[in-house]
Structure formats: C-alpha cells, structure tokens
Amino acid sequence: MTDINLTAILYEKDDLRLEDQPIPEPGPGQVQLTMAQVGICGSDVHYWTHGRIGDFIVKAPMVLGHEASAVVSKLGPDVTTLKVGDRVAIEPGVPCRTCHFCKSGRYNLCPDMKFCATPPYHGNLARYYVHAADFCFKLPDHVSFEEGALLEPLSVGVHATNRAGVGLGNTVLVCGAGPIGLVNILTAKAKGASFVCVTDIDETRLNKAKEIGADFVVRVANSDPLKVAEEIETVMGTKPDITIECSGAAKSIQTAIYATKSGGVVVLVGLGQDIVEVPVVNAGVREVDIRGIFRYVNCYPTALAMLASGKINVKPLITHRFKLEESVKAFEAAKRGEGIKIMIECSRS
Ligand code: NAD
Ligand code: ZN
Image (cartoon, rainbow, N blue to C red; front, top):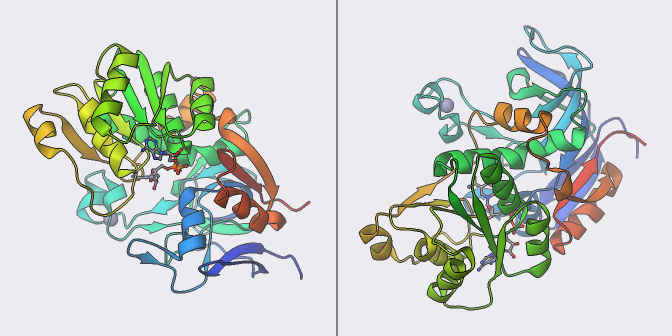
C-alpha cells in the first residue's frame, strides 16, 4: 500500500481499515495539519464495536479519532493566527457560529456542530487532516504532543467542574475512575477541592486515581446504592458538596444522588442507558441540583494554561503507545479495557 495519507477508516461495525487517502487541502479559514498524536476515546471504540452511539449511526465510512495534536503544514486563505510549523492541539468540534447557542457562548449545544469522528463527520486518525484554524490552539514548546492531545479529555474535566461550581475547600466525589473520572480528579483538585473521593468497581483504576491525587477511594462492591453512599460518607467523614458522575452506570447515578450533601450538586458526565431510574424525590426534597454536561465550551485555553503552567499533569494517564500503522492493535487493546489512555503516533516512522 502506498502511504501518502495513511488513514484509519471505520467502514462499519467491526470493520476498521487502514487505507491511503489523498492529502486534504485547506479551505478558507482552515489549516492543513500533519497529525502528531491521537488518543483513543471510549467513543471511538464504541463506534468500532457497535457501529453507533445512540442516534449517531455510522452509515458511511468514517475516519476515527478526535483527541489530537498536530503540526500546521499549510495555511488556507485568510488564516492569520497560525503559521506553518506551529504545534497545535485540535479542538475537535466546530460549531455553526451563527445560531442562538453559538452566539450566546454555549457553542457545545449548537445543533449544527461538526465534531470529529461523530457521524457523519470524519475524525483525524491519519497522517494529514484539515481543520478550522480558530479551533487549533498553539502549544508552547514545552508542552508535548501527547499532552496536547489530552487537552481534549482534560477539557471535559474543566467543563464538568465549571458546571459543578467546584471551588476552594469543596469536598468532591468522583464516580468512576476511567479517563474522564481521572481528569475530573485533576481539575477538581486544581480548583481547590479539599478532599476528593473516587469510586470504581475496578481496583487498578482506583490505584491510578490515588496515584494522581485522589484523597480517598471506595471500591464499589455492594449493589445497594444507599449502602455505597453510606460507605462514602464514612470514608470521607462527610457527604460531598459536589458529585461528578463519570461512569454512566445506573446504580452509580443513584449513589451519586444519595451521597451528595443536601443543597449540593450532582453533575452527570457519564452517558449510559437512555432512561435510568433515579431517586428523584430524595434529590428534590434535599435540593440536590442535577446538571448535565456536554463535552466542553471555551475550555481548551484553560486546560492548556493549566498544563503549560504545570498546575495539572496528565502524563500519568498515558499507559500505551502505538504507531498509526498499528491502529487496529491499539483498538483491540482499548477494547480489552487495558490501561487508561492509549496514544497513537501518526508521524511516519
Ligand atoms: P470508562 O468506561 O473508561 O470509565 C468508566 C469507569 O466507571 C470504569 O473505570 C468502570 O469500571 C467504572 N464503573 C462502572 N460501574 C461503576 C459503578 N457502579 N460505580 C463506580 N464506577 C463504575 O469511560 P470514560 O472514557 O472514563 O468515560 C466515562 C463516561 O463519560 C462514559 O459514559 C462516557 O460516555 C462519558 N463521557 C461523557 C461526556 C459528556 O460530554 N457528557 C464526554 C466524554 C465522556
Ligand atoms: Zn451554532
């Protein structure tokens, strides 16, 4: 196979191929990017194994990948903010910029969002890719491409903790210690949370949570969410002011509500079943606010500033590294649930 622009394309469920593609040319306001690092996200794996996430269905071949960094290799017309050779992190969702949500500053809610590797839009697990210049963020020299790619999940943590209102001295519970739970530990701590407690059903994930700064961990073994909530209160010595639910598991969402202090906040980050039974009266009479989040909005600059200043370290999240040519192997490792964050290097050997 020639390798002009080797690209990881999902044809349909269980059919991920590496194929050569033409090198894309940047249009007005766009840059051509020589891809550096792409992290595998649970959603990439889910599209590969299920061919869909909810109403987003892979109906035509789609390039995977959306947690990415790159080098600018060509400028389209009218691009003034970047130059060839700039190292950048790519914010993967480009909104319409004109609707009510975009204009009011909540572009993550834009109904016309074009988001990498969310059907029908291509991702960037390839040698070359084209993206809107204003959704590329220049990386300082000392921020690595791997860290640049991890700005994507880190931004989810920035947004979730923003929506939760985490502040100085708050006690925080994070449910689920996957990559998203872990970035929420990092952002909650960075925002001044006093104690962060983390739950998971998996011991190795809890060990990683401890490694990156969780103050307490609770391994969920009991199937009764009320009992788990009691356990959390015992371990923390208090009910948490804020709970950030990052597993999507129904029982864990129930635990999140029971566990949270009256007057507190539960943020639902995890996305599991469409319809989940929750103790809504318990939340209602205790004035526990339940808030959703969708990805992130205006969070890349904050996430980057926190990495560049050394206030947040995402490097411990990276457990596996593959080359673009080995993408299928990388996805198989992700499917087996190995490690935390699997990175794919896209530059030619
Ligand atoms: P992941 O599957 O790697 O992590 C989930 C973790 O939850 C796992 O470690 C798992 O062992 C743990 N878990 C399962 N059941 C549990 C229970 N009962 N109690 C406590 N922990 C339990 O996934 P991830 O990549 O970390 O993403 C987490 C969730 O966030 C997913 O549902 C994903 O779809 C969602 N997500 C949402 C947004 C958004 O914008 N809302 C963005 C990114 C990811
Ligand atoms: Zn819009």
